[in-house]
Length: 133
Image (cartoon, rainbow, N blue to C red; front, side, top):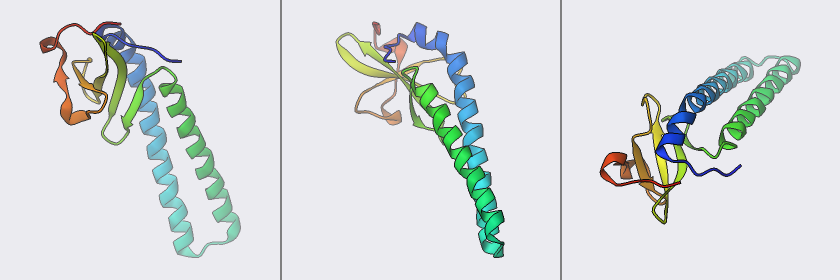
């Protein structure tokens, strides 16, 4: 689903988006643990059965992670970095397509940047005029 957000609609959606993003981070961390466990099995020279079971567990965890990402991005929100906690909400500023941006730890959407700008191009919402739906 494609959605254009305003600062108001993005902030209204933010609690659920944050919950979904926290779930993605937890699933990613689970994948990392399983990768380490799999590597330990390889390093120990363990038998095929143990390796295959752990590999299948890892594959299922990766599938679950990507499904969670698909669900979040299905709301129109773009994950820019799981590691840095960066999410962007598509919006319009007058006739220009822009991103409303949120970083993990922030309480609300306070910044935006152009389509071709990243996190370093963030500008405060209150100094740039109205962002229209």
